[in-house]
Image 1: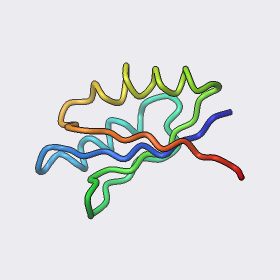
Image 2: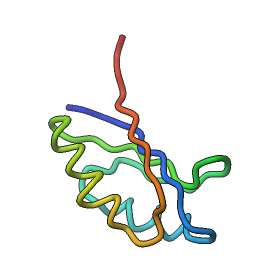
Image 3: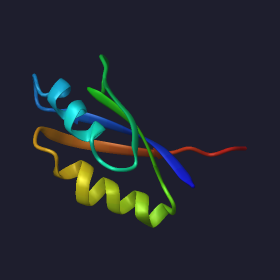
Length: 77
């Protein structure tokens, strides 16, 4: 299982809506709107890195109102 944090920047005033829509995507554990340089932070999981990448590109990045994403895979050192 691969987990990652997805840091999202949105259009002004869209953070709450974006978080609500993303929270319903299969594989998303949590989606919250936050303050700071990013507007939404998502915790997601998938079976493989490829599946995680597909989720981000095909599902998360297609949500209306998103301007930029940064995916940070979780590592256990």
